[in-house]
Image 1 (spheres, rainbow, N blue to C red):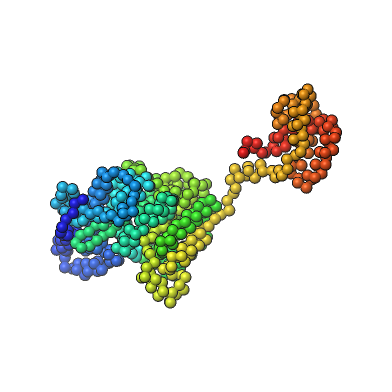
Image 2: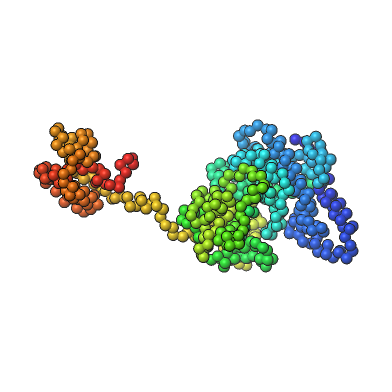
Amino acid sequence: MATAAEDPPGLQEQAASSAGARRNVVTDGQGPSTSQTNKKTIGHRGIDPTGETTYKKTTSSALKGAIQLGITHTVGSLSQKPERDVLLQDFEVVESIFFPSEGSNLTPAHHYGDFRFKTYAPIAFRYFREMFGIRPDDYMYSLCNEELIELSNPGASGSLFYLSRDDEFIIKTVQHKEAEFLQKLLPGYFMNLNQNKRTLLPKFYGLYCVQSGGKNIRIVVMNNLLPSAVKMHQKYDLKGSTYKRRANAKERSKAVPTFKDLDFIQEAHDGLLMDPETYNAVCKTIQRDCLLLQSFKIMDYSLLVGVHNVNQASVEAQAVSVDQARPQVQKPLYCTALEAIQSEPTRMGSMDMEDKTGGIPAKNSKGERLLVYIGIIDILQSYRLAKKIEHSWKALVHDGDTVSVHRPSFYADRFQKFMCSTVFKKVAGKPSPAKKRRAVGHIPLRKVPVFLTQASSESRSDPEGESGMPPGRPDLLPRALSNTNSFDKAREHTVSIALDNTASSQETTALTHNKAQPEPLEESLGAISLSDVVPQMNICSV
């Protein structure tokens, strides 16, 4: 892998020179508005004088170009390496390649400014992608064939979000501590994926870093939870806490605002209603994921919930099908909400739509059909010293159990209870037809009638075949049965013995009496079949 002795001049120089050229065009009367624009920063995220988004003073367009060049190179070079098992040291490998603007024998020329691209644990992440059925050419095509789509950030972290054109992958900028924590988390993450691929946790497909001018911009590639082809009528970011968990006025002014816990309690107090099988699958998956996060001492994560109202969409005549003009790549495995909870499509949702988008069928209190898209996000927050101090300070002013930051065990327990009692609720479902048949066909036969064995032995000891029964087949009816009424009475008498356990002793006495008088018994009962004694029992079920 090619390296350079000197540090790259950086994308910032190119961004600063272009910004300076644009600044010369701006008139003097626009000075105050420009200074106000420069102050619109959240964390490392800001806006330059032209209105373009920046991250650590690097323009979004330059960052997107650097990401696509770097991923194209690293995935292409990785495909030339032979496949092998993942080793422990693979989680600590960092590969680096320098991209000069004039190009080199390994990299193409570009106009984004010099930068260095780092790839963390390439062998391990290649294994993760293969585990979810993502081929290298599909991964490269999704992220690098067309320009990435920049998404607005509803949170206060100041991160940038990019979406691939095929709607499969999300690229998010992360802080240094989050990237470092993910590196430490990789061995445990690897072990969990091998044990259970169906999870609501984020699927990490790659961890990279764009380095320029002394600035490190770390990015992570994940699965996309909310498909763009489906209109989300409601969207929630839920933690299970209530302290300051309400969307502000700025957020509510958006076309599709992201509401929080108190908003959900107020607006959807009846919860999202699911049939028992789906509800149990959702809660089981949440419980398993929370146990894993607790073991890693992770807290302050959220459940992202997107709700598509099928009835409302029908009225609005919204087009929810994926654009067929765009070439479709192979879909990653276990990445939709329905696949993640280990549940099959049920009658509560729209089967055609959920087959395409993987939404979980549900209903609201009005009986309207819903498709719910869920996933656990923001799992790269560990309970470090800073978080402990934050919890202690907030607990002095407010109720400590209501604040978001809390110790991992308490946070996981509160998270599960809120999701499975307030957000998702179980409706009484009708038993399936198969269960009905099993319930009707079940007869509590506690004792085998004695006369069944007696009749079989008598038929085997009849050398003349007077009873009219085929030899060796005591389970068949006789070839000639003269008295039909007697046989019907015998069957009613037999079934009553099987169902009434209290009369077993009396019937045993009657059978003993009949043994001394074989002639009346033969005339009244004849040869009895096993299917007559237990007509609903499957004889072959061993």
